[in-house]
Amino acid sequence: MSDLKQKILDQAEDDLVEIEKALTHNLKPHLDLVARTAKHILFSGGKRLRPLLMVLAARLCGYQGDYDKTFACVFEYLHAATLLHDDLVDGAEYRRGKPVAHSQWGNSVAVLTGDYLLARALSISTQTGSLKSIKVIAEITEQMSQGEIQQLTHMGDPDLSEKDYMDIIYYKTAVLMEGACRVGAIFSGASDLEEQALSDYGRNLGLAFQMVDDLLDYTADAGVLGKKTGADLREGKLTLPLIYAYSKAGAEDRDFVEKVLAHKNFSVQDFEKVINILKKYKGLDYTLQGAARKVSVAKKALSVFGASETKDLLLDIADYALVRKS
Image (cartoon, rainbow, N blue to C red; front, side):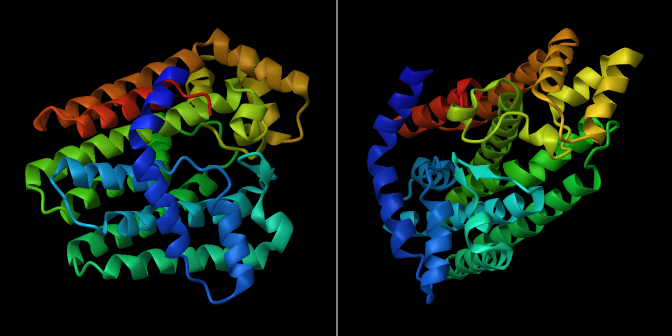
């Protein structure tokens, strides 16, 4: 896993350096407080996967201009905005191993900084003059909001279906990766076939990415993950490992899961028992297998493109989504 990660970082190094510069250069808030709050979430160790996907998608489709890194900022700003809002809604304490923004600057500043980042993303997108790209980005912001609301309506609901779960993670996570890849194609003047292929790649990569993320919430080391394990369960979020295990569990185990969901301040021992239930009913295995299928579909979508270093890098990123530890 570490070899694959390093391979990706080595191949993407120049792009990541330029993306980092663009994120700083294009932020441009008028108030220092907004800058400090935005930089807290933007420069706290994010992977820059979403802007990188846009840059690579554009390159795969033959883009040779110099605006790709600037336009790619849109996707990191949108992502950071949702993190600021989500952390507040979820009552989170840590993000990437650091105290969340609202714990340092207050709820109002965190919300309004998130709003600023959303607006800044839309402002940058207009500079291309591509109405199609702007429309995609506007739709992304709508869908991400609705995904969060849909998740809120199902908090603590042990009967959340797998279909509802997949809808939620599509709107909350996959739609942004799908959009980054799709806009990269639009931005470069790609064919409809290439645009659809990259959309399919991004959507399935995003679904796999979130499924693995939900798996890590039960299995990862908290120091590596950057937040406490079990955070989703403590917030009342049912994710696929528990949804599947609960659907297969006997009455006694189902009662225990319901008890934990109803009392969010559960003990370490209770959490360990939940993990044992997930293992007993193969919830962890089922989730990993489902993520692997999404990765396979994502990689297959790129078959319309000829061999290239950029395509190989996108294939490696798909593989890494499945084996990552944070």
